[in-house]
Amino acid sequence: QVQLVESGGGLVQPGGSLRLSCAASGFTLDYYAIGWFRQAPGKEREGVLCISSDDLSTYYADSVKGRFTISRDNAKNTVYLQMDSLKPEDTAVYYCASRTVPHCSGLTGRYNYWGQGTQVTVSS
Image (cartoon, rainbow, N blue to C red; front, side, top):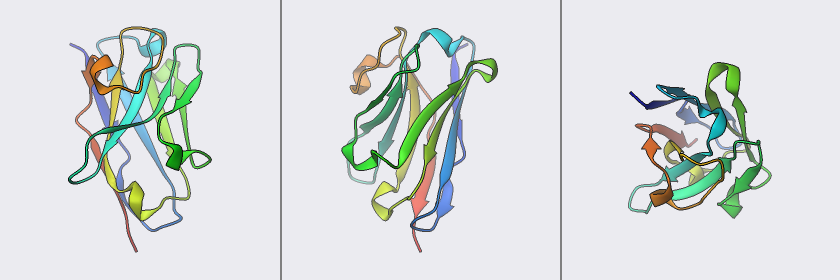
């Protein structure tokens, strides 16, 4: 059974950092593109970052460039989203998702498997 589980969310002050994890089970994520998306209250789910099977990163949200990075640890079958210099507008539920092809996409419909999401709240 394919499963993605996010963790690492929480409450952080503006300017702080969080690292989200996306642990996969039931499949090996080495060969597939993994994306991070977020959904703020009242807004549509948007793409944030994606990492391809050959470790190329693609940003889909200009607002996170220079602050967020994505990485993978194939030995742990896990993808990470490092978020630095967090702002209140980063507050959202963050989801990881997997495609079944190596290349990234910013479209939610191109992803086959989704995690349950983890809440990130940036507030003083």
